[in-house]
Length: 139
Image 1 (cartoon, one colour):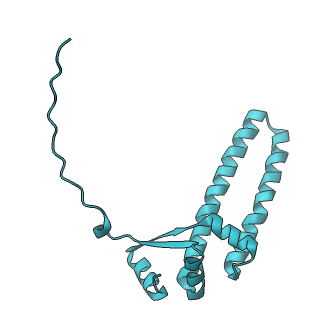
Image 2 (tube, helix red, strand yellow):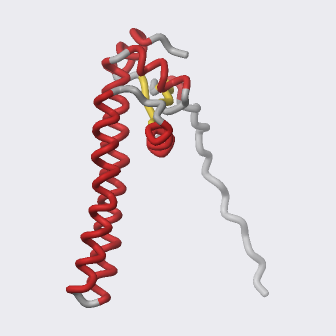
Image 3 (spheres, one colour):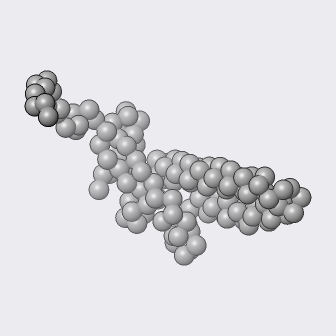
């Protein structure tokens, strides 16, 4: 595990990549294991917003034709889920950068994954050689 000071320094230098498990974060929140107030409040608001969105989509489906209601539901839920994943990932990362205890908790629970993002870690590509065309025999 990378120490917190090295994590912050590597992230600021751009030599560190991070991945956040949003679904695991949500599961830990519902289990009551996340004690960070900032994260808990935001996850609570997102969780309350989802049933509200579903209610609005059901009510809207009574006022629009079926095709438009289904299309609107799919588009709205897609945007909501993408925004949820983005904001939770950003929230977990910013909290881990600011709070050493949460960083240790997040890495121990496998909510936050870190990996080196240096160019020297990429595999070396082999030099491509042109291939000769094979002759086909006429039939």
